Length: 394
Image 1 (cartoon, rainbow, N blue to C red):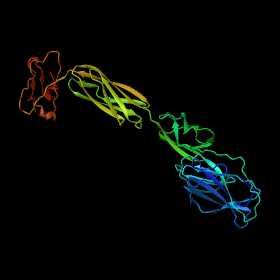
Image 2: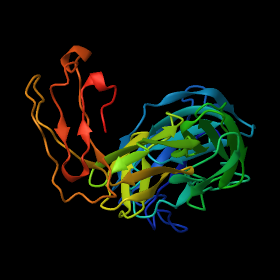
Image 3: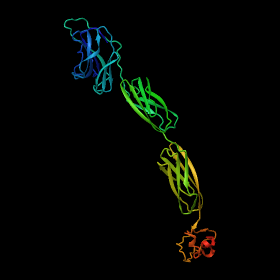
Image 4: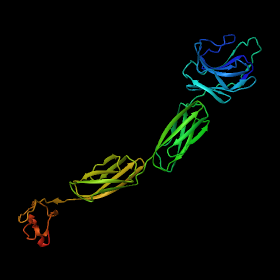
């Protein structure tokens, strides 16, 4: 703006209603229209400089002062060129003079019927007879529709492997967002990264050496707004080994417990355990523990293979276990009393090729030294004898 005449008031007009700006010969402003003004006022005493500024809103011809008339940081003298800028930032209006911030006010971004209308309005005042031609020059006028970033999104992996580099890309919306845009990246266990450029997208790469969940945050900033987005990537701990604890020998009809144990104990959960065994239906458990147990019962003898596979989001481990299931028939005896000479017989339907196991607890040699107790096994003629015979089974 070039100030060539002293008795004038200059106003920058913006967010004007359609038809606000008059044609030739019409009143300078339609009083029934709505618009905002940045007024620049001359010094009323010396009349040689523009010295004050004020934001005004006009609603149906009624002026509402949004700020008080305030001194400019530097007066605009006659014959000088100056750069003026008014910036609309969503709900804020800011005024800059020669690149220096001067002031701001609250702005209703939804007000008016056509916010993309801007203009320059000159109100010439009488100068008490001093007359003279009025001169005002405007050069390099540029109306920029500043578009803030409404949002920003981060694209990148959500699961990773330690000590591996991963790229993350931030994309700002809308595509018309005003550039340049500054991207400020922050991530867990990482130093901040700042990029600035004329693109609506930006990329950064990170690598981590410590497991856990990492949060990446990007802040996209341009001259009229800010948008923030976050993204998470997890580094689960893989399963390295698995073992099965359980019996190696068992009997038909008995319940046998087997326990899977994961290494390392800090492995990421949940873990899915898949149990498979001979003559059994597969069983699946999902657990937040690094151990898991199962019960199996077999109706038939033989060597049984048990397999368990454990899996988390990083991978799986498998191991197997063998148990031999035997046909063993028990003989249950009542308490043997000293001196009873009691005989206890097993049913005679025991097949000749079946082992018969009898467990006898003896408190001391003195209890059986007189050979006064025993047990007869019927047709096989097998006999449990006292301690003095130096044998328990004949």
